[in-house]
Length: 109
Image: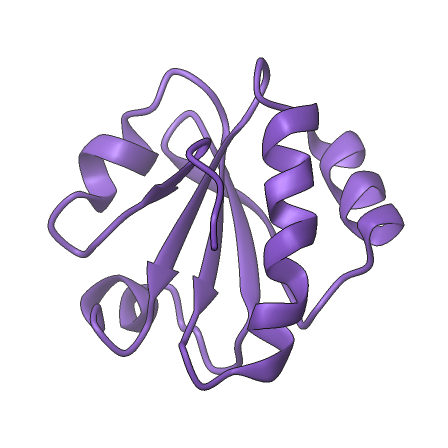
């Protein structure tokens, strides 16, 4: 179960919740049937607590929302994309350990 600190976004809310956010936003593109997506969920929950003052974490279900994933060329999941100031700043494809996620975020925040 995801944390209350993680925002669920859709094709309809992506612009307002991600591109127009005051804070950088890490978007996790995922699906219910994706094992590695489930593995990183608790790591993202921890990151939401650790980075909450500097970063918003959002999740987008690629089965329910196909417009945004197509626009950004999502081919494999989980894919993590970091947006800053309405622009895509960095991408990571595949499940990450907590230390890999921390290194990725620290390198871009």
